[in-house]
Length: 119
Length: 119
Image (cartoon, rainbow over all chains, first blue to last red):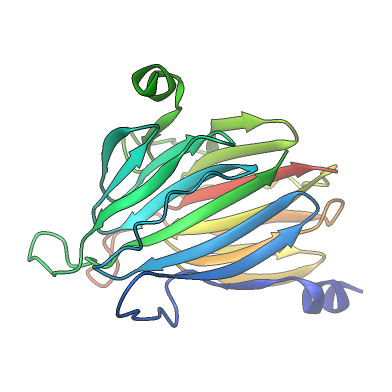
């Protein structure tokens, strides 16, 4: 019974098999469960300048690298570990994502966790 | 308008102001939104041997340290970056959490992100 449940459990490693996009972002779904969707996002150094206006609430966590977002017309700078909640229909876009390694911050590629919640 | 929205946005840093519990875990709520609750969990080296049987689905992500969980009677070893989904009413408990720094893994304290979804 335990082994059967274990076989059904969805697991992985957030830092394994990271893609290396040349431009834009790579979105990978880690979990979908009822109104919840969990995604890993890996950025290149050239973010897509798309203005998002989503039906879902979103909670994002930057796990490595540095980034600048535009949220409701304002600019927010993010470093590793920073998280924020973006309510549904708050216009936002990615302005900048780090791409060059520095000795102070070896994890220079932006890796994000995004939690989407359908309203 | 942008600044007003920005003032309402809940943000923080997952690795800031980490507590240092002597025993058990410290649970801190980062977000509560409808049926979603996001928590940071910081472990000591002496986890509480509580057997959890929750009404909520749970997705956990270990961000630093190493741990062993018992899930549905089976043991799972986790390292930094490992995530897994624990369906509601799957009995589980924390068996072991790392507490000693090693040169190979400086981030020895177990820091977790837990996503709870009410069914």
